[in-house]
Image 1 (cartoon, helix red, strand yellow):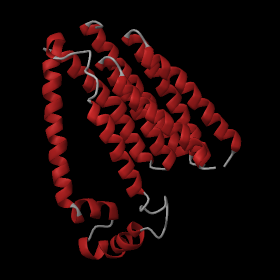
Image 2 (cartoon, chains in turn blue, red):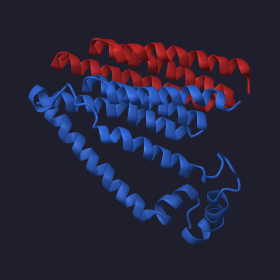
Image 3 (cartoon, chains in turn cyan, blue):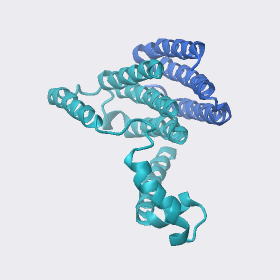
Length: 176
Length: 88
């Protein structure tokens, strides 16, 4: 019963992804990628990861589409070919193989929502019991983000800052 | 899980396919933009229905409102840009 709506969603996902690859011009490929992001967000919402769905919709469907379009138009008619080349033949053979390999590896993953999964028996109780004693932070999410994974968060901030600079440069050139 | 709600979900998915045809085949960029707009409208409704299935509507309504606002801003950005540059 739970699979009766996942199937149409995943089919739509495959359809938009394939259409974005075989689309004749880059402009329609960009818009198709936008609708692909919408479906991916719906899949996240269906799986219960609501915040991930929201980020996917905002960044994937909203911002990325606008930035792709900005890049296309700023590159001008000479800088970029609006008609794109067909994908190389080797990719058509190798990528399905890779997908098969990933599906084979996914067999070993724990069931969706399994309480006996390693992540929920091994790490989560550790954080829940020791977080306050070790970090003196009452909010456990903050403790994980800012204390246990401080280095990760630092590098993420660097990434966000760099992409912010890139976006600013892109938008500034657009307004000239 | 309610069967009629699942039926609604599937009907909406079929409706999305119709819009998708316009996005893929649309001769001009305006057809594609309108198709994308229609798809995101259906996505908003789908999110609310999914929330009803999970009986957590109040969370999902917030998200669908966010989708709607974002959709408006995105469409306006694309339209504004096409107005400035001229459609290719």
